[in-house]
Image (cartoon, rainbow, N blue to C red; front, side, top):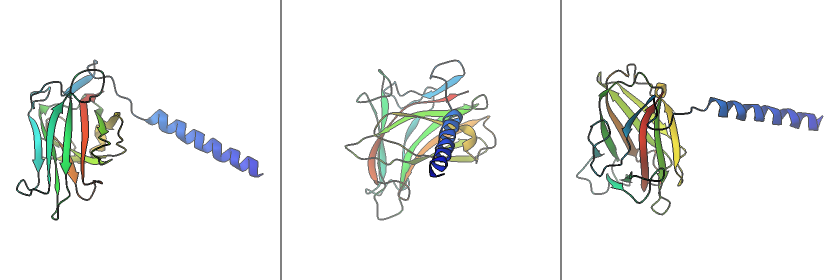
Length: 202
């Protein structure tokens, strides 16, 4: 009887794992038909592939104990060639701290796409948070939020369904993408992440 019970449990677990893998979203490769590249960071300029500027921001730029810096770098990247973006964040402040990166989306229409795709890894030597928040904003000033989790010191592809950004009801005219580090969510409170190849996929 005990062996039968163990077999049933194993069968259920196998079924659930298989179902989860089958349901995991899969994106088209960057540059393929049915994709839109937002930024591949393969230029030393702080301009994305849509023609939109991007840069760091901080809740309190006058507070030296918090802030975010960005660097385009060839030290590491997703894939065999090109550049990537290094985000150096600090939310270790005695006052409330949050900061990150903003990026203009040039009023692009996201409605033909299902997924926001990005590639991320943490810097083991500097330390890094395994989670941070992404916000999307549209022309109607609606804001959708999603928390990326499971970041490691190895490159990973994160495929985020656009429907997960619950605050957005209209993806027709998109204005801005924002990355946010905050003192409640980030541990450690000082660290570095690499981001590469942010794009949309059908």
